[in-house]
Image 1 (spheres, rainbow, N blue to C red):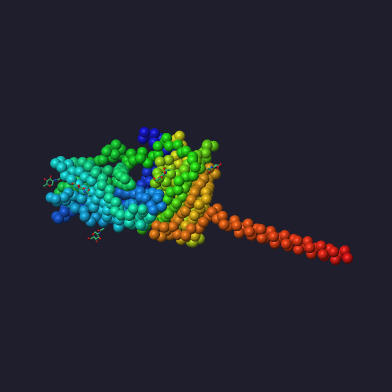
Image 2: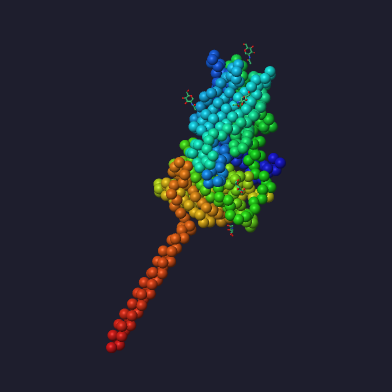
Length: 413
Ligand SMILES: *[C@@H]1O[C@H](CO)[C@@H](O)[C@H](O)[C@H]1NC(C)=O
Ligand SMILES: *[C@@H]1O[C@H](CO)[C@@H](O)[C@H](O)[C@H]1NC(C)=O
Ligand SMILES: *[C@@H]1O[C@H](CO)[C@@H](O)[C@H](O)[C@H]1NC(C)=O
Ligand SMILES: *[C@@H]1O[C@H](CO)[C@@H](O)[C@H](O)[C@H]1NC(C)=O
Ligand SMILES: *[C@@H]1O[C@H](CO)[C@@H](O)[C@H](O)[C@H]1NC(C)=O
C-alpha cells in the first residue's frame, strides 16, 4: 500500500520534499525543557515539536480548522520533577488560550509517558473568529508509552493523535524522565516508526494521497473559509468555492475542492501573503498575494500539484497573474462565478469569493470591493445612459438634417 502510494511521485524524493513543505509550512519551534531538582541536577529533559489542528463550528454554521503552534513564546510553569505524591510532569502554556501537559509514571524497571492533556479556549476570538461555542475545551489522551528506566525516548517521526475536533501532531521528540545522577542517558529507546526507517520518510504515506481517488466533476463546489494565523491573530482570510479545471492529454478533469477535507496554512508578510491548501488529492494549491503601488493587493501566483488519479500528477506554477485586485485595507469580493486562468490548460473557477490577504483586523473582513461581474446595477445606468445618448444623437441628427434642408432650400432660391 505504501509503495503504491509512493509510486505516483514522478521524482524520487519528491515525497520527502513534500513532507518538508508540509511540516515547514506549519510554523513550529522546538520546545526544550531541562528541569532540575533542588540540587540543581537534571531530573527531566525534553525537546520536541508539536502543533494542533483544531476544528470548530462558526456562528455562520460552517466548520473552520485552525493550526496552532507555539510561536517561540512557551512558558513551562507547573512543570515538576515529581515527588512522593505526584510523578514528573511537563506543563506548557503558549498564547493566552492554550495549555498542554504530559505526565510520567514509574514502574519497577520502566517508566511511562502516561497521558497528555491539551486545552484551548474558544473565547480567544483572534484565534477562533466567530466561534459558535465559547469556552475552554479539554482533550485527554492516554499515551502509555513504556520506556526502560535510564533510557531516553526518541521519536523523530510524526505521531498524530486524533480526538474529536483536535489533531495533535508531535515530531522530533527526545525525552527522559526519572533522569539518574543528573545526566541524560545516552541510551535511546526508539519509537516503532523510527525503528522501521532511518529517516523521517515513513510519515510520507500519511500525506500521500491514495492513488484511487478519482476526481468526479459535479455541480458547484462547496464554499469554504480559510484563514492564516501569524501568532498575532488572523492575518489572511479567504472564503470561496473552488473548482479546478485541468486539461491533460486532451482529457478534462474538473475537481471541486471539498472544504471539509481540505487543510490549510500559510504565511503573512508586509509585502506578500500565502495561502496553502492541501487535501488527499491536492498535494498543494498555493495562492500567493502581493502588494503593488504600495496601496493595492492582487493575486500574483498560483502554484498547484494535483493527483489526477491513474498515477498522473498535474503541477503548474504561474507567478505572473493579476487577479483579485483591490485596495489594501479592503477585501475583494466576487459572488458570481469567476475564472482565474493560470495557464492554457489550467483554470480555477471561483464561487462566492471573498479574500483579504492583508490588514485583517480582529479576524474579520474589511469593506469589500466587488468585482464588476457582480454589479448588475451598473448595467442600468449604462442602458439609461446609452438610451439618453442615443436620443441626443437622434435629436442632433434631426436638427442637422433640418438645418441642411432649410439651407438647401435657401440655395435653390
Ligand atoms: C509563569 O511564571 C512566570 C514567573 O513566575 C510568570 O511571570 C508568568 O506570567 C507565568 N506564565 C503563565 C502563563 O502562567
Ligand atoms: C497524570 O497521571 C494520573 C495517573 O497517575 C492521571 O490520572 C492524570 O490524568 C494524569 N495527568 C495528566 C495531566 O496527564
Ligand atoms: C548513579 O550514581 C550511583 C552512585 O554514584 C551509581 O552507583 C550509579 O550506577 C549511577 N547511575 C547511572 C545511571 O549513572
Ligand atoms: C474547462 O476547460 C475547458 C478548456 O479550457 C473548457 O472547454 C471547459 O468549458 C471548462 N469547464 C469548466 C467547468 O470550467
Ligand atoms: C461538509 O460538512 C457539512 C457539515 O458537517 C455538511 O453539511 C456537508 O454536507 C459536508 N460537505 C461535503 C462535500 O462533504
